[in-house]
Amino acid sequence: MSLISSYNDWGKLEEVILGSAKNLTLPDLDVSVRHFFDLPSNFNQAPQSQSKIEQVIYELEEDFNDLTKLLEKYNVTVRRAEPIDCQTYCKTPQWESQQ
Image 1 (cartoon, rainbow, N blue to C red):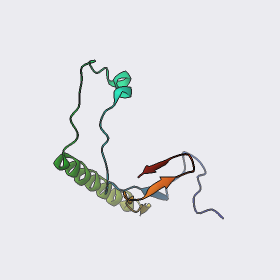
Image 2: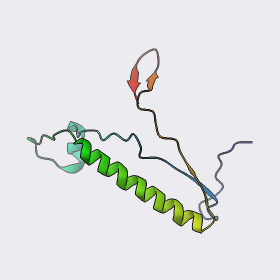
Image 3: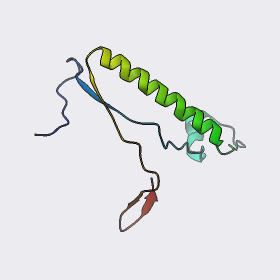
Image 4: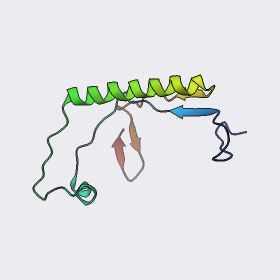
């Protein structure tokens, strides 16, 4: 029997998996986002500073912890995913990519 299942959209929430912001990386904007955000053609974004990334990670983890407390208050089982190891590589015969 599978540990993961879903029965409907209207039943009582019993269990949920929340991710982790640890080891988060923020990608720089690329040309493709111009279609979504109407950026000017001369827009150039500087790389994200480490302090900004650390602030985002801190605030996301704080939000995840608050959400966990709220859900547990309503007897929902909350499972937290392990942080992604960013030193791991995904690889196929055709390509490879660092996490």
